[in-house]
Length: 197
Image 1 (cartoon, rainbow, N blue to C red):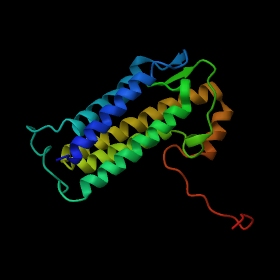
Image 2: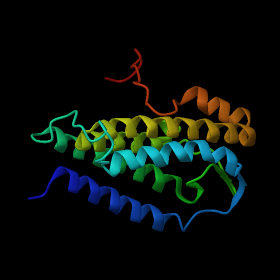
Image 3: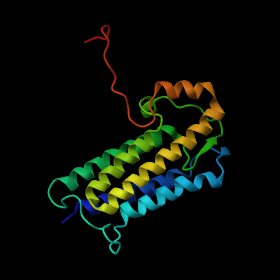
Image 4: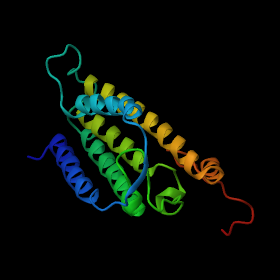
C-alpha cells in the first residue's frame, strides 16, 4: 500500500531532479553575494532539511510524534506539498533564465512582475514553504516541526540578502515593487465600487 510519507518523498525527489536539470539553462551571473554571507542561511536550510526529511531516531524527543500518522491528515499534507511544489515550479518556469539557486544578479536581469510575481515577490519561496508545511504534516514529529522552523528562518534570511542585492542593483524601481507586492503571502484584494459585478 502506498503511504503518505513515501508519496511525499517521491514528490520531492521528482522536484529535485527537475530543479537540477532546469538549473543548467540560466543566464550568466554578473554579481553574487559573498560566500561568507551565504553561510548563515545555508546552514539553517541544511539543518532544517535534515530534520524535516531524515527522521532522526536516536535523539531524545526528536522522533516523538505530534500528529496522528493515520487518517486523512498525512494525505492533506501530501496535497499541501503538491500545491507548494506546483507553485514553486510555476514561479521557477516563469522566471526562466533569470533564476539562480544562490543570491545573484544575472546578465540582462530585469524585475519580473508578471505571473506569480504579481502576487508575491518571492513565489518560489512561498511555494517551498507551503511544501515544507505539507511535509511536516506528513512527518508529524518534533524533528519535523523544528526543521520547518529552521527552514522558514533560512528562507527569510535569504530573502533579506536577495532584496539587499536587488535594491543595490535596481534602486528605486525595486523599492516601488517591494511597496506594491508582498514578499511571501499574497494580499487579499478588496473590491471597489467601480469594479464590475
